[in-house]
Length: 203
Image (cartoon, rainbow, N blue to C red):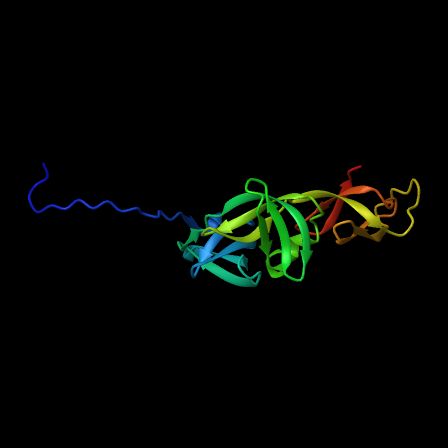
């Protein structure tokens, strides 16, 4: 029996994960002013006995805008908890990019500004991860390296493996990358989606 006058109230607490500035690596998701950001660049600078600062470039996952922000010394920042949903890319139009949830089969539409950096590396039918923040789809995550077919490129030079010569190639996803001279139309190449650079011939 509870002591007279005591009221026991149980509440659900939303525990926040706090990160030190040394944990702000590329790809880390954080929350600033109630909005989710991802770290796209970070560099630690030592400041003598005063500790150091972490220079960062952050991309807002709601609107795609990039900001620069420095974090100092013992400062901490809240981690952004993002849920992932597997979805298949369907098509893109004036409304944005459309995907199909692989579990519910519902259509998920993301504004072009939220996927502009990734969309050029996504081809029809590709399975990607939709990032959700507070129950709302906000962005898309794709692998660092993807294999895409070359749709068009100037004629290749058979047997030419010189590292110095390159030419532009348009991929089936719409991206244009510089490739070695021996790459031909129809070849499948591996591309780094973070840098937009050719990695190797994949098939």
